[in-house]
Image 1 (cartoon, helix red, strand yellow):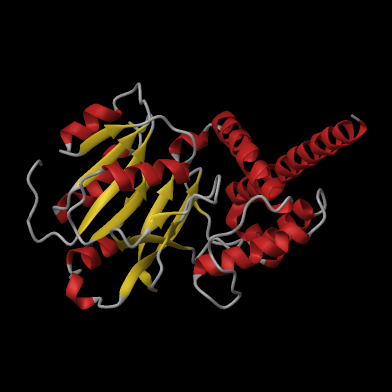
Image 2 (cartoon, helix red, strand yellow):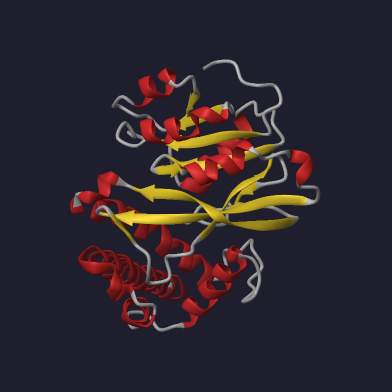
Length: 298
């Protein structure tokens, strides 16, 4: 559809790159809400663009560097005219319960609120990852336009920042399942790229060339707690912390109950990926130290 109700309270913004397997189910899940849909694509070569056109979405294209910068470009370059924005990943789906809540949403019912956290259910190889600290899992996905912005201090973990009050919707879920990750070679290649970004980000933090935007707080918002846990993580010794994290998630947070899919997911995400990041951090720090020594000798 090209025309939307003038009283729509929110706009959907979605990032895509070769998402023909995911985009139809996402757009179908929000179609009944009659809200504007804007898609920022980074050069898809499959049917992504034709699917977007079929659902009446407005599409722009922009080269991809990382998720935070891509979200920043989307928020600054689409002509959003609604008071609220909902930023979604292409592999997410709005459940019927969340859709009903959004259908009843009225801007006037939320005075003084700048952002809303959605609850997410994450699936891997067809299995809901229920344990290991992955449920409940709250993501700031809905925020007042021009009040919220993309956190450019992050290299990999994209999140939105709002200056004011936030609230958490515990009922109604976003479902997230990247079907392309069912092929393990895709998962490994994707996370190998992510490890470069995350290693570079932590080295910047260690060398005090970068800071966290969000104020860490153990008892604050979900993002403030994440920022707090990140600070603890950075203080832990390299190479040891991936093993500690996996043991914590798999045994203490009961990831073992997620079945064989859960073992693969928690092992790869908590141990393998974090170990690769630590190796790359060590390489970057070693390279920087050698460069410093060479400079001092000259």
